[in-house]
Every structure is written in C-alpha cells, then in structure tokens.
Length: 343
Image 1: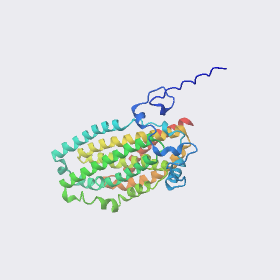
Image 2 (image 1 turned 180 degrees about the vertical axis):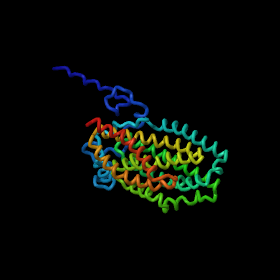
Image 3 (image 1 turned 135 degrees about the vertical axis):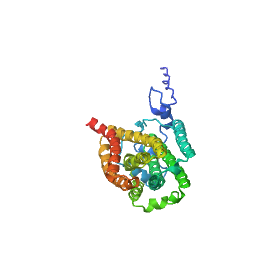
Image 4 (image 1 turned 45 degrees about the vertical axis):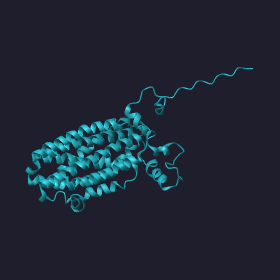
C-alpha cells in the first residue's frame, strides 16, 4: 500500500496579496486606494449587477448603460495611478500647508485694509467675475462627485474625490472674499447680487448652460471629458489665471496671489486627468476617437462660455478665448501623444 503524499504547503498570503503575485511592496498610496470601490463588481466577467438586486433594477441598469457600455474602456482600470499619488494623509498634509499660505495672504492684506483701496474698476470686476463664481464651482463639484461615484476604479474615484474637496475649498475662498469685499464696499452690490448675476447676466449664461449640460452627461467617459478635460481647464484659465493677471494689472496683488494658490489645485486635477486619458489611450488606442469626439463637442460650449465672460475682465473675446484654448490644448497634447506613439 503506497504511502499518501502530504499536500503541498500553500504559500502564505501577504498583506498585499490583493495586488496579485507581486514582489514589490505597494506604496502607501496604493495600499489605501486599491480595490476600494464597492460598485465595481459588475466589471468581473459574467457579473453585471452592481447592486444585490434584480439585474434589470434601475441602479444596475444605470451602471450597465453609462459605465459598462461607455465607449471609454480599458481592460484594467486599476492599472492607472495618480501621478501625485494623493491619498488621505498626503492630501491633509498638503492642503494644511497650502491653506496656511492662503490664510497668510488673506490676513496680511485684510489687516492692511487693501480692499478699501481698490479702484472702482477692480471692484466692478470682482463683483461680476469673482463673487458669482461660487455657483459655477459648486456645479463643478457636483459633476466631479458623479465622476468619482461612477468611475470604474477606486484610483479614479480617489482622485476625483480630492478634486471635489479642492473645489469646495475654492467655493469657501470665494465666499470669504465676497464678504470681505462687501464690508469694504457696501454700495457695490457684492454679497447680494451674485445669484441674480448668475441667473440673468448675459456674461454668465453660457457658463451656466455649460455646467448644467455637464451635469446630465451621464456616460462616465463623457462626464469625465466634459468637466476635467474641457470645461474646468478652459474656465479655470479665464476665472482663475486671467482674472488674477487682470487683478494684478489693476493693482490688486491680493487677488493675483490667491489665484496662484487656487491654481495649484486646478493644476493637480489637470495632471491626473491628463494621465488617466493617456493611460486609456495607451491601453486601448480606440479611446482616442471617443475622447476627440467629446472634446470637439464640449470645446465649442467651453469657448462660447469663455467668450461671454471676457467683457467682465475688460478684455477682448479673442484674447480671452485664445489664451484659454492654448491652456486646454496643452493639456490635450500630453495625452494625445500616446496615440501618435502607438501609431
């Protein structure tokens, strides 16, 4: 009678076995970000139900229609990495430092009473171009939250979540500046007229239409493209960078410095968004066609919004739109390089 052979000893699982049979210790960013989305079960072959309900329930059909059947696809979205590798601890430390800088600017210029010394021209610009921004940026927040919710990987959800938090910081900053300007110039209408300007002023209506349309771009790829690759880069260039430059030319150093600090948040969003688009094109070159289609569609809408805002800055439509287009196209060139490399 043959002696039974002992069963082969199973290899002990490591704490990072979720990453597969890897030899490299994952980074802190990867450990706390990997496979955190509860709603990505539907991406497993043969399993399409995100919710433990009938596959034809509204929730399951939503993800099936707008994520699983989106033209924007790769086989493994978990291969994407945020180039800044932002996770919770890193984000808190980063923004604590950045907020200290911002608070320092606000305190220094507030103590000096510089708002009261602003020219009537600059006060009028801030009243119409700065104060109503909180409505637009709140719309950006909502669209970014949707991108994070429906995203096919926790690496995308995480990046979108921190971009959403950045937008909240910007809304708060605009609100703070609005109140400070209202105190310094009570006759200006700042602090009381913003909603009417947002809803009725001709300069803001194309931007309002743009974000409202973005909020009903349900396909996850189009939602990401419309906001992160077109509308936000275009309008941030106008309402952050160009407004900052105009303010400095008008003697308002405070608004220029604030625009530089807030612009860092926009730049970080642009980096991971560009990296995600590049990753998608490298993994599946056909994604470039879908991205170009959406970019062409939304660029028309974004340019119309930028042109309408130009008079609020006292600049020509041609100058404002051309400057915003250069910023946006620089972003696009980074990821479309991957298409050229693969051809």
